[in-house]
Every structure is written in C-alpha cells, then in structure tokens.
Length: 165
Image (cartoon, rainbow, N blue to C red; front, side, top):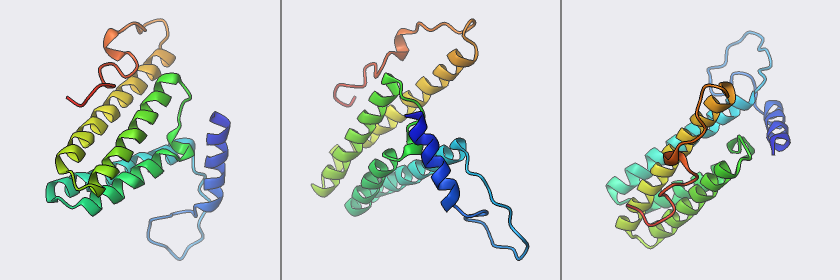
C-alpha cells in the first residue's frame, strides 16, 4: 500500500508545476517536489471544502450541491494520498466513510433532507474518530514505551457502526 502511495506522490510531483495555485512571477521557478505530506494535506483540504459545501447544501436544501459534493468526497477518498496507512482500523474507517457519502448522495437524489443531515453527522463523527485514532497511533509509534496502547474508548469504530445517534 505504501509503495502505491509513494508512486502516486512521485507521479503527482511530475505533473504539478512549481507554484501551482500561486501568482506567476517572471523569474525562473525551481521544481517543487510534492511530498506525501503535501499530497495528504491537499486531499484533506479538498475533503474539508466538500464537507463545507455539503453543510451549505443542507442548510439551503440544495440537493444538487449535497449530491455533487458527496460524490466528490467519495472520489477524493479513493485517491492514493488518502491511504496513509494500511492498518485494519484505518481501512475500516475509510470504508465506513465511503459508504456514508454514497448513502448521502443517494439521499440527496431522493431529496431526503433529514436522512442526508443524519448521514452528514455520521460522516463528521467518523472523521473525528479516525483523526483521533491516527493521532493516537502516531503517539504510540513515536513514544512506544510511554503511551498506553489499551483504551476501550478507542476501539475500531467503537459505537459508530450502528444507526446514527
């Protein structure tokens, strides 16, 4: 899994021009290497932008906006940069996220605002739980002798696999 991520980042580095998204200046530009962290940051900001657009769509009952951005979230979650680890827990969170956004897109097509809103809340809970899990994993990796690896609250998808609360 990590090899495909590295390959995708390397390919991205060849495609993304230096200073992409910035004003062009007339001086010579150095090639910028896109790191795995840069690619992940880009993916997470795309995720945040689509999530904000869904929130706006929900507030305005704009089903087209909800559907479009839910579909885009699924697409973004399929990118190589998304898969930062191949742990079972991370894969489960990612799969759950994809299922939620697929369901949300369908609910937007059905113009079911209440159900789409509930899925948006589930999506948000899943994102927060996954980010919490990843921060904890990083601490365990970086400080293996000082961080307890046992925490009942942090089990894989704990209390998140049932119906929305």
